[in-house]
Amino acid sequence: SSKRKKSKSTRATKYTKIRAHNICSNIAGGNTQRAAALAEGISEATFHRWRNEKPEFAEMVEQAIGVSEANLVHKLTSSEDWRAANLV
Image 1 (cartoon, rainbow, N blue to C red):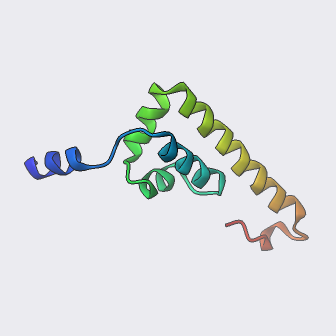
Image 2: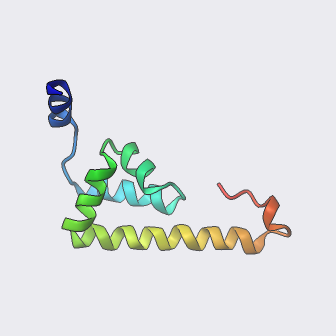
Image 3: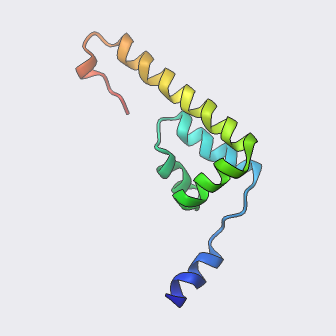
C-alpha cells in the first residue's frame, strides 16, 4: 500500500483552468465524466471533489453536460430512424 500512496502523491491533481476547460470540452463532446477526468490525468474521485469544492468548475461541468445532452437529442431527432443514428 506504500506504493499506492507514493503513486497517488505523484499524480497530477492540481486544479487549473486549462485542465478544467479540457475536462469540460471532453464532457461536451459526449465523453463520460470518468473518461474526461482520466483523459486529463485525474481520478474520478478528484473530479467529484473539484466539482464539490469549486463552484466555477461545477457550473462549467453542468454547462458541458447540457451541451452533450443537446447534441445527443439533436442526433436522435435529426435521424430518420433513431436506432440507426450514430450516437457516438
